[in-house]
Amino acid sequence: MRINEVARCAGVTTKTVRYYESLGLIVPARLANGYRDYSAHDARLVREVRELNRLGIPVGRTRPFLDCLTSGRDHADDCPSSLAGYREAIDDLTRRIEELTARRSVLARQLHRAAHRNSRARAEGADEDTVSHLTDLLPPDLPVPEDDGAAAHLPGRAVPPIELPDTAGGVVPLHALGHGRSILYCYPLTGRPGTDLPDGWNTIPGARGCTSEACDFRDHHDDLRAAGATHVFGLSSQDTAYQREVVDRLRLPFPMLSDPGFLLAAALGLPTFEAAGAPLHRRITLVIRDGRVEHVFFPVFPPDTHAHQVLAWLRDNPEDRPAENEVPAPGPSRD
Image (cartoon, rainbow, N blue to C red):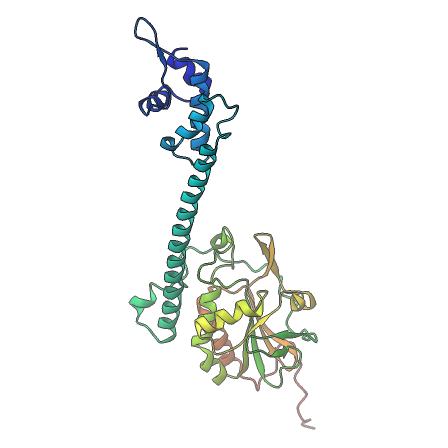
Protein backbone atom coordinates (compact mmCIF):
# COMPACT_ATOMS: atom_id res chain seq x y z
CA MET A 1 0.00 0.00 0.00
CA ARG A 2 0.98 3.61 -0.57
CA ILE A 3 0.98 6.03 2.37
CA ASN A 4 -2.41 7.51 1.51
CA GLU A 5 -3.92 4.03 1.38
CA VAL A 6 -2.57 2.93 4.76
CA ALA A 7 -3.66 6.24 6.29
CA ARG A 8 -7.20 5.71 4.98
CA CYS A 9 -7.22 2.10 6.14
CA ALA A 10 -6.05 3.04 9.64
CA GLY A 11 -8.28 6.12 9.98
CA VAL A 12 -5.46 8.66 10.38
CA THR A 13 -3.76 11.31 8.27
CA THR A 14 -0.67 10.77 6.15
CA LYS A 15 1.13 13.19 8.48
CA THR A 16 0.36 10.86 11.39
CA VAL A 17 1.74 7.87 9.47
CA ARG A 18 4.97 9.76 8.80
CA TYR A 19 5.20 10.70 12.49
CA TYR A 20 4.81 7.08 13.62
CA GLU A 21 7.43 6.07 11.08
CA SER A 22 9.83 8.76 12.34
CA LEU A 23 9.57 7.19 15.81
CA GLY A 24 10.39 3.76 14.37
CA LEU A 25 6.99 2.34 15.31
CA ILE A 26 6.41 1.17 11.74
CA VAL A 27 9.13 0.30 9.22
CA PRO A 28 7.67 -0.10 5.72
CA ALA A 29 9.49 -2.00 3.00
CA ARG A 30 11.11 -0.12 0.12
CA LEU A 31 10.40 -0.80 -3.54
CA ALA A 32 13.15 -0.83 -6.13
CA ASN A 33 12.22 2.71 -7.12
CA GLY A 34 12.60 3.89 -3.50
CA TYR A 35 8.89 4.26 -2.70
CA ARG A 36 7.59 2.98 0.64
CA ASP A 37 5.47 -0.15 0.50
CA TYR A 38 3.15 -0.49 3.52
CA SER A 39 1.69 -3.85 4.40
CA ALA A 40 -1.58 -4.82 6.09
CA HIS A 41 0.47 -5.44 9.24
CA ASP A 42 1.76 -1.85 9.09
CA ALA A 43 -1.82 -0.61 8.84
CA ARG A 44 -2.78 -2.65 11.91
CA LEU A 45 0.16 -1.23 13.85
CA VAL A 46 -0.97 2.29 12.99
CA ARG A 47 -4.50 1.48 14.18
CA GLU A 48 -3.15 0.07 17.45
CA VAL A 49 -1.07 3.18 18.11
CA ARG A 50 -4.12 5.35 17.41
CA GLU A 51 -6.36 3.39 19.78
CA LEU A 52 -3.77 3.19 22.56
CA ASN A 53 -3.21 6.92 22.31
CA ARG A 54 -6.96 7.49 22.65
CA LEU A 55 -6.79 5.48 25.89
CA GLY A 56 -4.22 7.94 27.19
CA ILE A 57 -1.04 6.00 26.47
CA PRO A 58 1.56 8.30 24.89
CA VAL A 59 2.59 7.36 21.37
CA GLY A 60 6.18 6.89 22.48
CA ARG A 61 5.12 4.19 24.97
CA THR A 62 3.21 2.00 22.52
CA ARG A 63 6.24 0.03 21.35
CA PRO A 64 5.72 -2.93 23.76
CA PHE A 65 2.21 -3.38 22.37
CA LEU A 66 3.43 -3.28 18.78
CA ASP A 67 6.26 -5.72 19.53
CA CYS A 68 3.63 -8.04 20.98
CA LEU A 69 1.69 -8.01 17.73
CA THR A 70 4.81 -8.39 15.63
CA SER A 71 5.77 -11.46 17.67
CA GLY A 72 2.65 -13.18 16.38
CA ARG A 73 0.20 -12.63 19.24
CA ASP A 74 -3.44 -12.15 18.35
CA HIS A 75 -3.80 -9.02 20.47
CA ALA A 76 -1.42 -6.18 21.27
CA ASP A 77 -1.94 -6.68 25.02
CA ASP A 78 -1.35 -10.45 25.13
CA CYS A 79 2.21 -9.97 26.41
CA PRO A 80 3.45 -9.18 29.94
CA SER A 81 5.23 -6.09 28.63
CA SER A 82 1.89 -4.77 27.36
CA LEU A 83 0.27 -5.27 30.74
CA ALA A 84 3.17 -3.40 32.29
CA GLY A 85 2.47 -0.60 29.83
CA TYR A 86 -1.13 -0.43 31.03
CA ARG A 87 0.02 -0.28 34.66
CA GLU A 88 2.50 2.48 33.88
CA ALA A 89 -0.19 4.53 32.15
CA ILE A 90 -2.57 3.99 35.08
CA ASP A 91 0.13 5.08 37.53
CA ASP A 92 0.71 8.23 35.49
CA LEU A 93 -3.01 9.03 35.49
CA THR A 94 -3.21 8.39 39.23
CA ARG A 95 -0.39 10.87 39.85
CA ARG A 96 -2.07 13.46 37.63
CA ILE A 97 -5.40 12.95 39.41
CA GLU A 98 -3.72 13.38 42.79
CA GLU A 99 -2.00 16.56 41.61
CA LEU A 100 -5.22 17.98 40.18
CA THR A 101 -7.16 17.01 43.31
CA ALA A 102 -4.60 18.78 45.47
CA ARG A 103 -4.74 21.84 43.24
CA ARG A 104 -8.55 21.81 43.37
CA SER A 105 -8.45 21.62 47.18
CA VAL A 106 -6.16 24.65 47.32
CA LEU A 107 -8.51 26.62 45.07
CA ALA A 108 -11.53 25.56 47.14
CA ARG A 109 -9.81 26.73 50.32
CA GLN A 110 -8.96 30.04 48.69
CA LEU A 111 -12.58 30.46 47.60
CA HIS A 112 -13.83 29.60 51.08
CA ARG A 113 -11.45 32.05 52.76
CA ALA A 114 -12.32 34.81 50.30
CA ALA A 115 -16.07 34.32 50.72
CA HIS A 116 -15.83 34.37 54.52
CA ARG A 117 -13.48 37.34 54.46
CA ASN A 118 -15.83 39.29 52.19
CA SER A 119 -18.84 38.46 54.32
CA ARG A 120 -17.01 39.56 57.47
CA ALA A 121 -15.93 42.77 55.76
CA ARG A 122 -19.53 43.65 55.06
CA ALA A 123 -20.58 42.72 58.60
CA GLU A 124 -17.87 44.93 60.03
CA GLY A 125 -18.82 47.95 57.93
CA ALA A 126 -16.16 47.86 55.22
CA ASP A 127 -15.83 50.91 52.99
CA GLU A 128 -17.59 51.01 49.66
CA ASP A 129 -14.49 50.13 47.63
CA THR A 130 -14.13 46.90 49.60
CA VAL A 131 -17.83 46.12 49.53
CA SER A 132 -17.89 46.50 45.74
CA HIS A 133 -15.77 43.34 45.50
CA LEU A 134 -17.94 41.18 47.70
CA THR A 135 -19.32 37.96 46.30
CA ASP A 136 -22.94 38.71 47.25
CA LEU A 137 -23.30 41.83 45.11
CA LEU A 138 -26.04 41.62 42.51
CA PRO A 139 -25.54 42.09 38.77
CA PRO A 140 -27.22 45.25 37.43
CA ASP A 141 -29.39 43.47 34.85
CA LEU A 142 -31.38 41.08 37.03
CA PRO A 143 -34.90 40.45 35.68
CA VAL A 144 -37.64 42.03 37.78
CA PRO A 145 -40.32 39.60 39.05
CA GLU A 146 -43.92 40.49 38.26
CA ASP A 147 -46.89 40.45 40.61
CA ASP A 148 -49.00 37.61 39.24
CA GLY A 149 -51.47 37.64 42.14
CA ALA A 150 -50.00 34.52 43.74
CA ALA A 151 -50.00 36.18 47.17
CA ALA A 152 -53.27 38.13 47.01
CA HIS A 153 -55.07 35.60 49.22
CA LEU A 154 -52.63 35.81 52.12
CA PRO A 155 -53.46 38.98 54.12
CA GLY A 156 -55.71 38.08 57.02
CA ARG A 157 -55.06 34.33 56.79
CA ALA A 158 -54.51 32.46 60.05
CA VAL A 159 -51.10 30.85 60.28
CA PRO A 160 -51.55 27.06 60.42
CA PRO A 161 -50.22 25.00 63.36
CA ILE A 162 -46.80 24.25 61.93
CA GLU A 163 -43.52 23.88 63.81
CA LEU A 164 -40.21 24.16 61.94
CA PRO A 165 -36.62 23.55 63.08
CA ASP A 166 -34.32 26.54 63.35
CA THR A 167 -30.57 26.97 63.17
CA ALA A 168 -30.37 27.67 66.91
CA GLY A 169 -31.27 24.05 67.62
CA GLY A 170 -34.89 24.69 68.55
CA VAL A 171 -38.32 24.40 67.00
CA VAL A 172 -40.40 27.46 66.10
CA PRO A 173 -44.22 27.25 66.24
CA LEU A 174 -45.24 29.64 63.49
CA HIS A 175 -48.83 29.74 64.72
CA ALA A 176 -47.77 30.74 68.24
CA LEU A 177 -45.02 33.32 67.95
CA GLY A 178 -46.43 35.37 70.77
CA HIS A 179 -47.66 38.93 70.91
CA GLY A 180 -46.32 41.43 68.42
CA ARG A 181 -45.11 41.32 64.87
CA SER A 182 -42.80 38.70 63.43
CA ILE A 183 -41.06 39.07 60.09
CA LEU A 184 -40.79 35.86 58.08
CA TYR A 185 -38.97 36.23 54.79
CA CYS A 186 -39.04 33.20 52.49
CA TYR A 187 -36.36 32.80 49.85
CA PRO A 188 -35.34 30.15 47.31
CA LEU A 189 -31.68 29.20 47.84
CA THR A 190 -28.68 30.80 49.48
CA GLY A 191 -25.44 30.20 47.59
CA ARG A 192 -22.42 28.91 49.45
CA PRO A 193 -18.69 28.83 48.61
CA GLY A 194 -17.65 26.00 46.33
CA THR A 195 -21.20 25.10 45.29
CA ASP A 196 -22.64 26.04 41.92
CA LEU A 197 -26.11 27.55 41.70
CA PRO A 198 -28.59 26.04 39.22
CA ASP A 199 -27.98 26.82 35.55
CA GLY A 200 -29.57 30.07 34.44
CA TRP A 201 -30.07 31.25 38.04
CA ASN A 202 -29.52 34.90 37.14
CA THR A 203 -32.17 34.76 34.42
CA ILE A 204 -34.98 33.52 36.72
CA PRO A 205 -36.96 36.53 37.99
CA GLY A 206 -36.64 36.72 41.77
CA ALA A 207 -34.09 33.91 42.11
CA ARG A 208 -30.76 35.67 42.59
CA GLY A 209 -30.09 37.72 45.71
CA CYS A 210 -30.67 35.47 48.73
CA THR A 211 -27.31 36.24 50.31
CA SER A 212 -27.76 39.95 49.72
CA GLU A 213 -31.23 39.81 51.26
CA ALA A 214 -29.93 37.99 54.33
CA CYS A 215 -27.17 40.57 54.75
CA ASP A 216 -29.69 43.40 54.48
CA PHE A 217 -31.84 41.87 57.23
CA ARG A 218 -28.69 41.40 59.29
CA ASP A 219 -27.63 45.03 58.84
CA HIS A 220 -31.11 46.32 59.75
CA HIS A 221 -31.92 43.79 62.46
CA ASP A 222 -31.60 46.24 65.35
CA ASP A 223 -33.66 48.82 63.47
CA LEU A 224 -36.38 46.27 62.75
CA ARG A 225 -36.56 45.31 66.41
CA ALA A 226 -36.72 48.96 67.42
CA ALA A 227 -39.57 49.49 64.93
CA GLY A 228 -41.65 46.75 66.54
CA ALA A 229 -40.51 43.43 65.05
CA THR A 230 -40.48 40.89 67.86
CA HIS A 231 -38.86 38.20 65.70
CA VAL A 232 -37.09 38.00 62.36
CA PHE A 233 -36.81 34.65 60.57
CA GLY A 234 -35.52 33.52 57.20
CA LEU A 235 -37.12 30.43 55.68
CA SER A 236 -36.15 28.17 52.79
CA SER A 237 -36.28 24.53 51.78
CA GLN A 238 -32.61 23.82 52.55
CA ASP A 239 -31.91 21.64 55.56
CA THR A 240 -30.84 23.04 58.91
CA ALA A 241 -27.17 22.10 58.50
CA TYR A 242 -27.02 23.97 55.19
CA GLN A 243 -28.60 27.06 56.72
CA ARG A 244 -26.45 26.89 59.86
CA GLU A 245 -23.38 27.35 57.63
CA VAL A 246 -25.03 30.46 56.14
CA VAL A 247 -25.85 31.86 59.59
CA ASP A 248 -22.27 31.33 60.76
CA ARG A 249 -20.62 32.63 57.60
CA LEU A 250 -22.78 35.74 57.31
CA ARG A 251 -22.96 36.28 61.09
CA LEU A 252 -26.73 36.55 61.07
CA PRO A 253 -28.23 37.68 64.38
CA PHE A 254 -31.48 35.80 63.76
CA PRO A 255 -32.27 32.12 63.10
CA MET A 256 -33.14 30.51 59.80
CA LEU A 257 -36.03 28.05 59.51
CA SER A 258 -35.92 24.92 57.40
CA ASP A 259 -38.99 23.67 55.54
CA PRO A 260 -37.79 21.01 53.06
CA GLY A 261 -41.28 19.50 52.92
CA PHE A 262 -42.89 22.83 51.98
CA LEU A 263 -45.37 22.44 54.83
CA LEU A 264 -46.02 26.16 55.18
CA ALA A 265 -46.19 26.67 51.44
CA ALA A 266 -48.81 23.93 51.12
CA ALA A 267 -50.87 25.16 54.07
CA LEU A 268 -50.88 28.84 53.08
CA GLY A 269 -50.55 28.48 49.33
CA LEU A 270 -47.20 30.26 49.15
CA PRO A 271 -45.83 30.66 45.62
CA THR A 272 -43.03 28.33 44.52
CA PHE A 273 -41.05 27.65 41.35
CA GLU A 274 -38.76 24.94 40.03
CA ALA A 275 -35.04 25.10 39.17
CA ALA A 276 -32.76 22.22 38.18
CA GLY A 277 -35.68 19.84 38.74
CA ALA A 278 -36.23 20.87 42.37
CA PRO A 279 -39.03 22.99 43.89
CA LEU A 280 -38.02 26.21 45.63
CA HIS A 281 -39.81 29.01 47.46
CA ARG A 282 -40.43 32.21 45.57
CA ARG A 283 -39.22 35.26 47.42
CA ILE A 284 -41.98 36.55 49.68
CA THR A 285 -42.12 38.17 53.13
CA LEU A 286 -44.92 37.80 55.66
CA VAL A 287 -45.61 40.09 58.59
CA ILE A 288 -47.27 37.84 61.18
CA ARG A 289 -49.21 39.44 64.00
CA ASP A 290 -51.14 37.55 66.67
CA GLY A 291 -51.24 34.35 64.64
CA ARG A 292 -52.37 35.93 61.35
CA VAL A 293 -50.74 37.28 58.23
CA GLU A 294 -51.00 41.01 58.66
CA HIS A 295 -49.10 42.14 55.59
CA VAL A 296 -47.37 40.59 52.57
CA PHE A 297 -44.42 41.82 50.51
CA PHE A 298 -44.67 40.26 47.05
CA PRO A 299 -42.94 40.35 44.71
CA VAL A 300 -39.75 41.28 46.52
CA PHE A 301 -37.32 43.41 44.51
CA PRO A 302 -34.59 44.37 44.78
CA PRO A 303 -33.68 41.80 47.42
CA ASP A 304 -30.58 43.59 48.68
CA THR A 305 -32.68 46.51 50.03
CA HIS A 306 -35.74 44.55 51.05
CA ALA A 307 -35.13 44.76 54.81
CA HIS A 308 -35.14 48.53 54.46
CA GLN A 309 -38.54 48.25 52.72
CA VAL A 310 -39.88 46.19 55.62
CA LEU A 311 -38.43 48.69 58.08
CA ALA A 312 -40.12 51.58 56.29
CA TRP A 313 -43.47 49.75 56.44
CA LEU A 314 -43.11 49.05 60.16
CA ARG A 315 -42.38 52.70 60.84
CA ASP A 316 -45.30 53.85 58.69
CA ASN A 317 -47.66 51.33 60.33
CA PRO A 318 -47.08 51.38 64.10
CA GLU A 319 -48.55 48.43 65.94
CA ASP A 320 -51.23 50.44 67.69
CA ARG A 321 -52.99 50.70 64.32
CA PRO A 322 -55.47 47.95 63.35
CA ALA A 323 -54.02 45.09 61.38
CA GLU A 324 -54.93 44.80 57.70
CA ASN A 325 -58.40 43.30 57.15
CA GLU A 326 -59.11 43.95 60.82
CA VAL A 327 -62.32 45.87 61.55
CA PRO A 328 -61.77 48.44 64.31
CA ALA A 329 -63.94 48.05 67.37
CA PRO A 330 -66.71 50.68 67.55
CA GLY A 331 -65.97 53.63 69.80
CA PRO A 332 -68.20 54.79 72.62
CA SER A 333 -71.57 56.17 71.64
CA ARG A 334 -71.95 59.93 71.64
CA ASP A 335 -75.66 59.67 72.45
